[in-house]
Length: 81
Image (cartoon, rainbow, N blue to C red):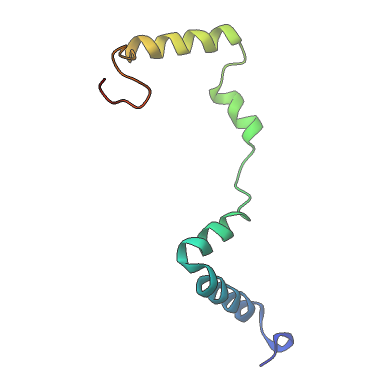
C-alpha cells in the first residue's frame, strides 16, 4: 500500500515504528517531546504563585534559607571536605 492510500492512523503508526527503529525508545520519546506544546498560560499562572514585588521575593528567599540553612562545611558537590 502506498502512502497516498494510507489512513492518517496508518501513517502515524508507520512513523512511530520508524522513529523507534532508528532512534530507539528513548530517542523516539525525546524526539516526540519536541512537539509537545504544553497547556495553559504560563505568564498568567506565574502571577498567581510569584509575587510581583522584589522585596516580597527577597523576603521569601530569606524565610526559606532560615528554615533550611546551607552548612558552611560542605562544598557545592555536597561532599565532606
